[in-house]
Length: 376
Image 1 (spheres, rainbow, N blue to C red):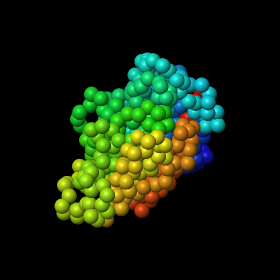
Image 2 (cartoon, rainbow, N blue to C red; image 1 turned 60 degrees about the vertical axis):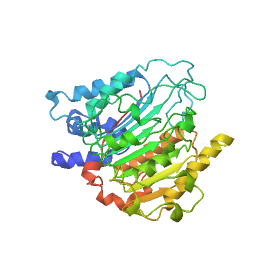
Image 3 (cartoon, rainbow, N blue to C red; image 1 turned 60 degrees about the horizontal axis):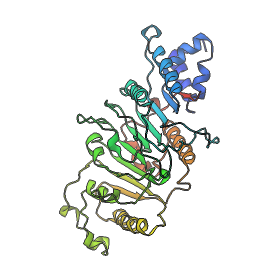
Image 4 (tube, helix red, strand yellow; image 1 turned 45 degrees about the vertical axis):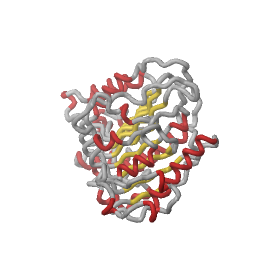
């Protein structure tokens, strides 16, 4: 290895370290020469299981130490998977390494919010893909907690964002009006945790129109079809995003009878969307929930069958296999994140025909990564 050019060795490390961090951590334990070569890519991809404050402190102190000028070029975090717990966790899910949040009868301040905000601000300039998975404070009957830490900065390079446990995306944008927080975002994946934690809150897609103006791909997994007062549920909002009028009086009509041709439609609110994937959750058994779910489900079916889309594909998938198990979602989302890092389709299995146009996202030199996984 002493005779190989530095760039070749770094590319070898990048090709080897696509496992979320284990290989990158192993390289940090090698002799000084190898550590120095691996430093620039050690934090390229980070899986941070940050349920406890010491994990955040440990990562931030290590990362800041490597960013000091005396170490040469600053390592950059390009891909980040962040799991967060609000109140602490018993070890309910040992198979995946992710534990469930405890049930808390009263709301309490979240001690990690400031630290998480500092971490996200530190990586915001360079990050390409971000997964934020938030475990709220409990199950049925538990008091609500903040969905995610407030993001008070922009992410100019972010191309892909996945959020779990954030029923209302407005929690991202508190106190931020302009400019757009995600000006380069192309792919947004929202995992609806309403039915997982049974803490139903309003769902609103409108903020994404302002803060992700260039978004081309949208996926919503485990979508609760419960309708929100004043918002009408995600299917109604999607129809508005795509410029398709919705009239309750047309509920019994066919798609062709109830909806006009594109020339008669209002302009789109989100003109760049060209691929939408919706995976609804299993319908509730209660009478009221089943009724509203049926109405939203019928509208979703009509959206999928609408015959006059222009440069837009709308796909409705079958419900997830294990919708109520957080550990299953963590395992699935992490596998999809790693697959995307390696240049695969990840959760965008129905959008692979569009990937070649995704502005270089599939180019191996930008996509492959070395990772750091923090669990201690």
